[in-house]
Image (cartoon, rainbow, N blue to C red; front, side, top):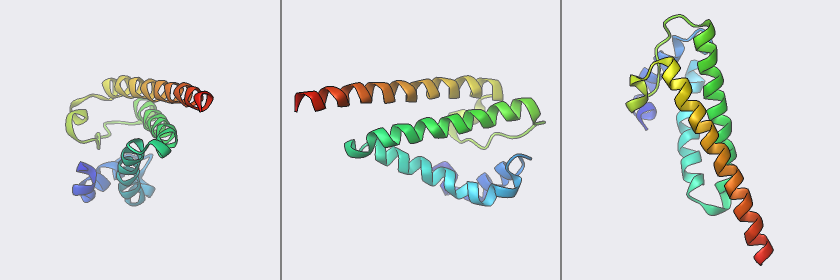
Length: 121
């Protein structure tokens, strides 16, 4: 929500990244709307597996971006809000890897539970 409440600041921050400069106006809207949509989908059982895959994909993309920043970027500001803006890029990478793994665990568990429910029906 922080990104949408101050979308212009978010756009300027991601625009400072040489990797995202040309698409910053588009990204400034797509990322926060996607995050909210995924959160809503996670709360709806029918869409939960799709949301888990979407979350996994988004976290992989964020993690790949952080790897690129660590390897090719110079002094690029973090455009994250809340607690995450206090983290350095290396800490942010570790955080993201943890959530990539958590998304993967969610997908595996959801798939196992879904198969059991189907077998019981």
